[in-house]
Amino acid sequence: MTDVPLLRRSGEGDHSLGNVRHERSSSKSGAGGTLGTAVAARAPADGYTLLLGDTGLTYAPMIYPRAGFDFDRDFAPISAIARVPYALVVNPARLDVATLPAFIEAAKKEPGAIDIGSAGLGTVTHLAIGLFEARAGVQLNHVPYRGGAPMLQDLLAGQIGASFVLVSTVADHVRSGKLRALAVASRRREALLPDVPTAQEAGLDDFRMTIWFGLFAPARTPDAVLDRLHGAVQEALGDEGVKRLWREQGAKVDLESRADFARFVTRNTERWSRIAKAANVRME
Image (cartoon, rainbow, N blue to C red):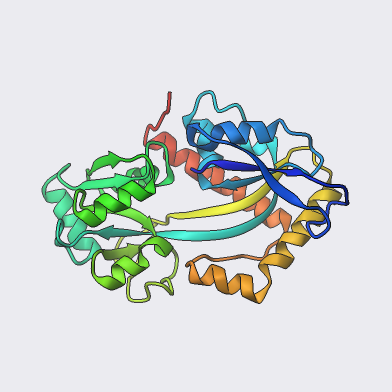
C-alpha cells in the first residue's frame, strides 16, 4: 500500500480537470495509507478532494481493525488508471532454480528454508506470498521489509533468495542476468519479459497477482461531477503519448465505464479480503 495524496481545489472553475488547477496540498501518510484514506473518506463530496487508491486499500479494513473507513461505503469509483503485474523472481547466485516447478520442488524438499521478501506486513506482496504458499502447497520463510526498495536491494545482494516484484521494476535486472524471473502472475505473457511464462503456463493454476491504481471520490459526490471527472481521466489515458509511457512501464490501461470500474473494484475487494482472511493477516 502507498501513501495517499489528497488533491484539493486551488482556484475557481468548474469540475473539468482542464479548467480546475489541482495541486498536492497535503499527504497523510502512515498505517499502510489508511490514515490518508480515512481523511479522504471524510472530505466534502464536491469533487475537489480525490483519492488515488490501489489494490491494498480495498482490503485494508480487513487487516487494520481501526482503519476508519469502508472502501465500498465511503468511496465512489471514478476511473481505473493502470494495472501492473508481479513476477516471481529469484537471485540465481542465492537460489539456483531455473523454472517455477523447480522452485516449488525445492520449497517442498525443505519447508521454510527459502527466504522470500515482501515490501512489508500487510502489503500486496505479503498476501501474494500467502496465496502462493496455498496454491503451490509449500512453506516459505517470509522476510518483511519496510518498503519495496530495501527488499529489492537485498534480493540483488543475495540476502534473500526470492520475491514478488513488479514486472516494470524488475525487467532490467532480469535482462542483465542479476535476477531470474520464473513466472509472471498475469493472464498473458508480458511485453517487458516476453520469454517468461505465466504462472499457469508454468503449471500453477489460478495464481494472478496484479496491483492496480484508480481514482476515487468521497461517496455522495454527484453523478454529474463523477461523470465529468471520469471523462477527463479517460481522455488523458487515451492520449497516444500517455499510453506509450504506460506501456514502457509494463502497465495496462483499460478504458472502461465508471460502472465497469465499480464492478471491478467490488470483485477485487472481495477477492483480496478472502486472501487476507485465509492468510490470517491482521495489523494491530
